[in-house]
Image 1 (cartoon, helix red, strand yellow):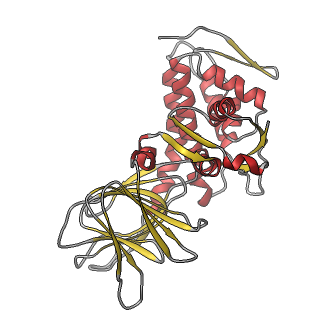
Image 2 (tube, rainbow, N blue to C red):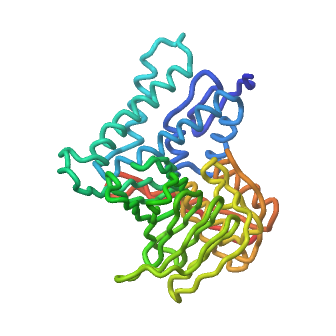
Image 3 (cartoon, rainbow, N blue to C red):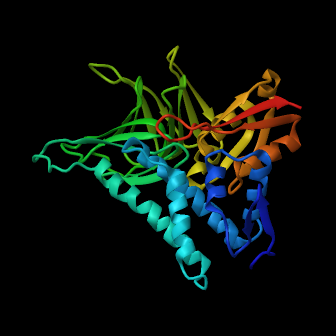
Length: 359
């Protein structure tokens, strides 16, 4: 169902619902260059109709995917989107609007696919029985899914890195993980599947579990949804088992003091991200900020220490960072300020900065 047509004006620029729009504004929104008033206006336009909402979400996916090119070459996403906008204006106006957007996505994703293939796969064919290790990285603010040589499915959260061999030979199934990932391991009782997490590791034969192992954090977390999991200590000579987990348990390994603890949990809270949901269940503001930082690729600073003690419960799926912050404001006495992103020397923009203070 189409929404009502409303003019969308910001600083002399206008967007007309379901008819025309300004790519520059959408680009500025996702790179953090708009004021809070401008961001609210963009979101109002995005919620005016199903068609606008679809355009908004697809723009977000494409814009965040452009981060893939940063490690391969200098890339100016704003300039690229402006070129696309020019091409759209040259098209005949009687064509369907969604058709135009499909062309935008195709134009922007084509170089990502081409250079991504070059980046993730080697040109030379390895010799027989030679193990070639490769790393799959997910850019900040992006989630992805891959399948390993044995059929194991892996969902990677924002900023995660999975290192794995091009083929599992001699019965060994070993991978390394930095960041967060959900594993659905292909069953093979004769050949255990192991995940190296640094000081500790995970061993399974076929199960589903979630791991959060970020390098900058002082803890590693494992949440088991199905089957059994063994946690072992990484030693040079042998790998002694520390504990065995049961479904519905969360293991927390504290890196500084080598302590491990097990807790019964609602696993949906820790695995909902693979379905595009952010779930908070009696979480402190520190935990809320940690999740939002990675989910939206922003940098939130808590300026008032008292805010850290606030506890939140809620589930979000399609909301923007601004909408979530506005909802948090309604349940607690906080205010937030968005600082415009600055352009870096390589042509990219720094992460959107947000300051939280007590109201």
